[in-house]
Each structure stands twice: as structure tokens, then as C-alpha cells.
Length: 473
Ligand code: F0G
Image (cartoon, rainbow, N blue to C red; front, side, top):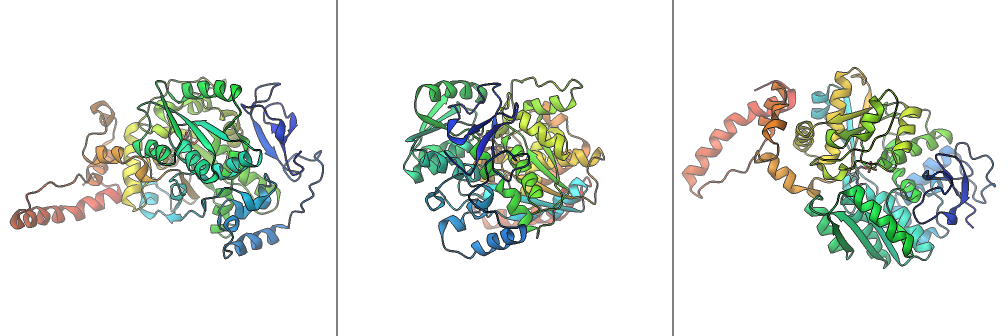
């Protein structure tokens, strides 16, 4: 039995030994989801004391910094570098790592101006080994699967979880099964799970239907479930909170903005910040706001419903990563907003497309689901919920190359329907026009090329100014 941690039901508070969770990671008493707790976790006082002594905050900061110069794989990982805060495996030298984490924090001055804030950064979790934030969770949960002797792992996914799981399973020599909704995930992601050797099953249903079938599978076979209901995933996914604070020299920003799909990532980051505050690593926690696509917005509806009722929706959005109508971790995410402050907003297809182009034009780029963060921030500023002087960090969750078809369709003007485009304000329309860069198709003739480019270059300065300043051209 693990002496370092237990699982606690986030609904009824029942605690169980780490190894006793059922195959679907639900509490048998109330069906709630578990979270991992340690002897030092907030509210964990009845747990037996850990045999591992936790260094003081200054000591931990120093240790984590030192590990950056180590050549050991476990130190080079941007997740396991913070291992004092996730003691979930017995033998840390045997963790499955692809050197995840260590992601860049970009200044976004043009997006800041567009959104109406003075200071805006983007923590780009799409710069992980398989191109999404899922790698930070997968290194954690897959290492647990290996330690517990599983041969097979599985997940239902909108594409990024499956890519990450397939890669980490392949590294560990485990077999993996992926359930994905047919025709509803980006090609880049589908190709990854095949490339990494997963058994890829496309089901004629949506993500929520894939989850239902997967739960039947793991009930019948000794297969380890790697969806984000697995609480160990969240232990890895909380570490970007530590890394972010470290990158900001332990100054905490006022506001973090995250996309919301199955709603595990927002919960994981919230847990990370709350634990750091509890341990004295930071003086306060930031607000966390969660942004959903308007077509897949159950948390947004919950947030604005006077009865606070959660009703699943039939999800539809081109931001396929967050095309989820019945999010498993909604209660955890709701708790994060309630405890830390923050809001839930939604973004239309037109707003997502514009925000994605704006992030791309800053030389950063991201996949559509990540762009909801900027779209949502614009609204929070306009509503007066975020003030211009607040320091804001957008969490960009996926790489722009995950969904190149979306980007190409956007720039060719083939993405949005007329009805969707009609929802844009004059300002948004002019920004779309300035940002769209369809490829020029020209005869390979000197005179033709020079003339066309001369014309384009003359108009490009004005359109660049319009794209960044927000003034119609
Ligand atoms: N952004 C991207 C790029 C994602 O892939 C996901 C989720 C999210 C945001 C939302 O995170 O679910 O924790 O709220 N993708 C999952 C998948 C569901 O299967 O890849 P969440």
C-alpha cells in the first residue's frame, strides 16, 4: 500500500488507499471523482505522516532550479523536476518520460492591446513532445500504470489525449487502445496515435459516446483507464502552475485563462496553485477563468444558471478538442472557480477563428481550442471583470500544427458559414480581412510576380496596422 498518498472523493470526502480505486475511478458510494492527497495536502491532517520529509519552500525552489542543469531524465522532465509535490510512484528513476514540460512563456503585446490589457503572457503547453498539454498528465498516469503492472492502457479522446497516451505507452512498451469520434478529430492527432502504434478505433458517435463504451471495456478487461477521470493525470497537469510561477520568479499573476472541455485541466491547475499556497511557495492564488466554445458550453450554462444546474448539451464546434457536451470533471472545475474566483465565458466560432488568427499573427500560433482563451479574455475585459492593469496568462493547450486544415480553410475564407461570419462586428470583420493571408497562386513569370508583390506590399502595412491596433482599415 502506498504510504505517500491516498485518493479522496471530491464529492463525499471518502478516502481510499491508492491501489483500491475501481476501473472507472469513481467513488462506489456516490460516483464522485477522486483527487490525490498527500500528508501535506490542504485538509489531509488525518493521514499518516509521510516517510518523505518535504523541504521548506526556499529549499524546494532551489532544488527545482538546480535540477535544470542535471542530465538525469527525471530531472530534465518539466513534470518530475517538481516531484516533491507529486510523490505518486515508488521508483522515480523508472518513470516514463519524453522530457515533457519546460514550455515557453511568451509575451503577447499585440494580443494584449487587442484584448485591452497592459500585460499578457501565453504559457504554451502545445510545445510539449506530442504537441499538447496532455503530455504532462500522461507521464504521471502512465508511470503509475507501469508500476502497477498493467500491459494495456486505453482512453476515449478528442485527439490530444490519444496522441499523448499512444506515445507514452509506446515508450514504456505497453499496448494502447484509443476510442475517437469518427470524422470529428483533427488529422494531425489521428495520425499521431497511428504513428505511435496505438490500436485506433473510430466510433460513429461523439466523445461522450466514446467514453460510455470505453467504460464498459475497462470493466471487463485489465486495462488501465487514462482519461482525465484518472486522478494521476491531474497530478502531472498541475505542474505547469509550478513552472509558471518559477518562470515569473514566484510572482503570481492575477488571472489565468484556460479552455474548458472535459474540465480536468482547469481543475489540475487550480489544485497546483492551491497546494503551492498551502505550502507557502506563493503568497496568493490567481483567479482562474474557463472559456468554452458556444456550441459546447455546459459549464458556461451552469455558471449563468440561477439554480446552478449542470445539463449536458449536444456538442458542436470546429474546435474539436473541446467538442464535449457532458464534462466528467465539471464539479472539480466549478469548485476551482468558486474557491479561487474567476468566471466562465463562451466564444462563438467566428470569435474563436479571429482569436486564433491573432495568436498566429503574433508568431506563436495554437490550435483552435486554445484560442478560446483570447476570445474569452476580450469579453471579460469588456465586461469589466478583468481590469487593464491585471497580469493575465493565457494557457495555450495545443500546437497550431495539430489542425492545419482549420488554418488553411480560415485563410482561404472557407471556414466560417455566412451566418457565422454575419455575427461579427465591423471591427472584427476588418480584423479578419487584415489577418487573412491566402496563398497567392501566380504564373512563374518575373513581371507577373514582381507586379503582384509590389501591389501586396503596398497594402500590407496598412492592413498590419489594422490587424493589431483594432482600427478598421
Ligand atoms: N485544449 C486542448 C487542445 C485539448 O485537447 C483539450 C481536451 C482541452 C483544451 C480541454 O481540456 O478537457 O481538461 O477541459 N482534450 C481532450 C482530449 C478531451 O481527448 O484530447 P479539458
